[in-house]
Length: 218
Image 1 (cartoon, helix red, strand yellow):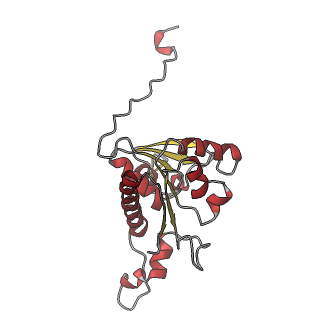
Image 2 (cartoon, helix red, strand yellow):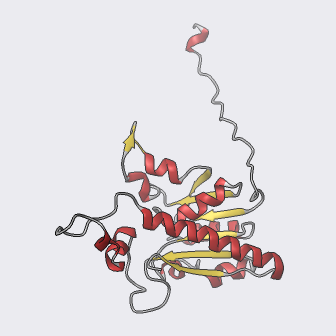
Image 3 (cartoon, one colour):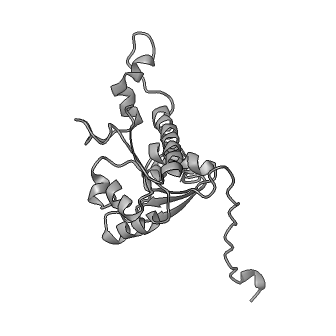
């Protein structure tokens, strides 16, 4: 048999060494879609080691959101940059144990499920703090962890409407129009990254972690 028909070993591409002021900072991103993952992406851009945890099967919902190029979501490629991915089923005790094992070694966790969801998965701040007292948890939700709307889901486009931003767009005499890009989700991602860095700075002084409650409707 000719050599050209012999199976060749798979060579994994070598990841470049991380660079930036956040080298050494470890982030566990268990969030979905855009807002909270964007915060983790910005941290990764500046050198943080970010692991993206996705549910098995379909993975992060953003993988299914276009535009697509050669069958792959460009939005996913942008938001998942500089991250490493693992699959974990948060619904099962085995998956929850995996997350807690990682939290022992990680500094920051980002999530954006509706308030109460991670409590049911035994991954609330109190659960994570019991595993790692120094952990910083960034929770981004539509309307925050308290208040009459806390149980409601919502993305940036809904917040554009409820906050009145849509009244500033469109044409005279016409209906409100959504903005042409996902600026609300991106903006809250920037604010999330900023909040995490303030909590990290405080932790360097006090040695204590924090739970950051951030709403998209801020």
